[in-house]
Structures are given as C-alpha cells and as structure tokens.
Length: 621
Image (cartoon, rainbow, N blue to C red; front, side, top):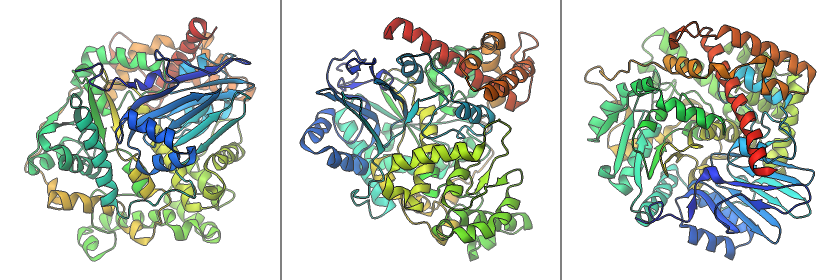
C-alpha cells in the first residue's frame, strides 16, 4: 500500500491550522507546502476531482455542489494571492476561528487556535458560565457559534470562510443558501446517493476498512443496511457495547442474528488497564473529547485505516428533537395501532404527552406567535423546573433551544449574566451567519439552530479525534444528500405522531421485516461489563484530579468579568472539594455524578489553556 493506504493526498484533520500575525501574511501550518489542501477525508470525490471541481466553478457554484453532494468529514483550505478560503464540509466535525485586529487563527483543534492568537486566551463570561453550569447535564448546552473563549468563534460544518489580505473577512453558512440545488425527492434517494459515494471511496481506496457502531437502534440499523447494499455484509465490521438503557446488546444482537450479521461485543472492561485514559487525557489538551462515548473502548485495539461509521445525529436532522417512544417504533402515536400498544394507562399517557410535545416542532406551531403565547403555560407544566421565555415567537423559540433545548422555555440560570440578553447576542450572530433568507424562514432557522448545536457538538466530541492511525468516526447523517433533504423540510402532524417514520420505512424495506420484529430477543443478553459508565467517570477524575488547583487555576485567571469570576471561582472551589479522592481507589472519588462530570470539564479547560500557552511559546512567537 502507498502512504496512508493510497490516500496520501489527505492530511490528518488534526493538522488543519492557518494563522496570521498582525500585519503579516497568512500561513498554513502544515507539513505540506501546497496552497490548496484537503484535511480529513472526503468520500464522494477523490482529492484530484474535488480540486478540479473547485477550479472549474465559481465559489458560489462550488458551495452549492458541496451542500448537495458532499460526503465525509473534511475541510478544504485554499490560499491564493493573499486570500484564504476555508470550506468545511456538511460532515465536518467542527473547528474554531479567531479573526481580530489583523490577526487570524483558524483550525480544527482548540488549543492550537488559542496558541496562535496574539494575546493569551480570555474566557467569554457567558459562554464559560453556560458551559460549566449545564454541560454535565447535557453536553449540548453550548453556544453554536461563540465558544467559551472571548472573540473565538466556532467553525461549524457547512461553513465558508474568506479572509483577504486587507483583513476583510466573510463568514457564512452555505447549507441554507436560498439558491441551493434541489434536494433528493425522498429519504430513500438521499440514503442511496450517500451510500453510492461511500462505495466509490472504497473502490478508490481498497486498503481502507469499514466498521460500524451498531447500537441496535433504528439509525445504526439504517446505516448498516445501506452499507450492506453497496459494500456487502462481509466487508463491514460491526461493534456493539453498552450504549444506553434503550439501545445496546439487548437489541443489537437479536437484530444482527435476524440479519445474519457478525456482531462483536466490546466490553468496557478495557478501561481497567488505564491506557485508554492516557490517550483521552492527551486529547483533552487539544479540545473537548467525549471521554464517555462508547466507541472510545476501541482505542486499545488495532483500528488502523478504518472509517468507523456512526448512526448518531439522525435525531437532530430527522425529528429536530421530537420525542421518539421506544415502545411504538414505526407505529404512529394515537393511531389505531398505537392505541393497541397503549394497553396500560402509563403507555397511553406517554403517547399523548409525546404527541403534544412534538406539536411544538411542527410548522403550525412555529409559525403562530399568538398560539405559542397562549400555550406557553401548558408546555411549562410539561417540563417542570424550566421558566417561560418573556417573548414567545421566533427569538423565544431559538433562545429556548439554546438554553433548555425546548422552544420558548429557559433553564433556571444561577450564573450572574442576564440570560435573555446574552442569548439575544448569540441569535444576532446566528442570523448573520445563516443569512437574511434563512433567518426569515422559521422552519429553516429552527433546523439550522438544531443542526449547529446538537449535530455539530456531538460530531465534534466524537469524530474530532482519531481512535487509531488514519481512523476516526464519521456521521453519515451529516452528508450533503441527507442534510439538503432535511434542512428546511416541512414538519406537519404526521411527523408529530410518527417521528423518523421514513427511517423505519427504509429499514423495513431493506431488511424485509419491521424493526420491532428485528429486535425481539429470544433470551436476555449475557453481554455485560464489570466497568460501569460511572466507573469510567471515577477513573478519569481520579487519574486527573491533581490538575485542579484553585489558587493556580488557568481557567479562573482567564476570566475578566468580576461577577463571572466570582461565580466560577465558587463553583470551582465547591466542585474540587466535593470530588476529592479519599484514597488510591478510584471509587473513593467524592461528589455527585454531576459534580464529578463538572470537575472533568474544569480539568479539560485547564489542560487546553496550558497547552495553548505551550503552543504559543514553541510555535507562534
């Protein structure tokens, strides 16, 4: 095989970094001196064909083609006549951008971007407080465009960045272009186009291998069935592990058996030897990895030259946070079939509640500000613990997504900044980023907000890091055919009653039997790990606790806002004290699970800031 199994034109995504000192020239920090480079791995075209398409089209036409057809996790970096153009694919795992006062720093990893800024990084008061107050409960309560660092923006998937020698910059999303190409007519066609691209990649790169995280859920099942059509079952390695209470070996093995597919269980017991944690801690100096993600257990085995496909993120695209009940699957809520399933009062109540919640995500609700105001008290009762947004309507809907993940409902914040005004600032940045046409369309606004929060952040945490040489996870849901099909697509009462119905129908068509019959277990699964998910958190914290030091905290020192500094100092102090290990045993770590996860967030930020300073000292200066 040639260098990197025949794909020597692709550079590791981690290496993507471009910068400019004030008054200087733009430089690409890469071992390759080419002015046009691909970082990461496109699947739909070879690097040569992608460059040919770039050279033979206007930038707007090229972006329309990317929005419609791109498949893969990559970013294009083109430097010509002092103009830098960065194009992030729809499946890009996300990066960061600093562009102030003639200086530029843009790349896939956080600490190198911070390290190439002309001054030491400072914390954004609201971004940091939001992240550290809510992230342990939900890792997606982060701002989609502002990071937790001042003047450092996120570089989301589907972004186009243009920086000129004069310092003038253009930064926008190209997935919701009003002149975008026509999307696939059906979900089946969108999936088929995506899988054809995957097949073409493996034909061009026969040394590469295909693997899939198979949870037993319908999303990973749909990905498997699509891959099976174009690659053959014998060419796909299937892995499952203890994903969640609903998906994992209990469903994965019956489905695999019914499909005559070979499935391997990967136990969490591999974490007991500690070597994986060493790799995770190294990743924590670069960015915010998902140390609890199931696939991390694969780091201890030979996974070289493999694309590990994930079914995750269909939720963000297909149902935009609509509730999908595991007991009903492809059966619609409150339909005749649904009523037969609702044979207990509890099940009946669950269907009614899910349907009423899902109505909030339909076009009828989103387009009617008055109805939103009238129904606010009702939805507030559905989610105790939240508070009503003061202004139901478009901005209330978007503020709700950023704060609580529910329209017009806000979390009860304890941090000292005003939540509404801080979220309004983010919405203003969001509106400029998606453009006037998209911001004037409530459906597209909601879809893009969900895409930039849940989808981008999940992809960043999971697919931003290699798990072996030339190996990283990839989310096929974030492909051009599928994103162009879903973004801005009408959602009506049928979606509220039967979320993801097209995915269930696709799986049923390719499998030959309904999903609910595929997952029927003949006997209870014996696949269990002695290392639990709580153990993993305890092990990580026990091994990294000495990073926490309030008196010498790089995180607290980087906060300029006095109120935020006081709040975060108190939070840091209480968390550190609560989580102090009592002995050499990892089970001796104290505090609640929330506090332990919060401590790991503080540790992660400490490592990033210190690594940024090291990077500045050794590279930038």
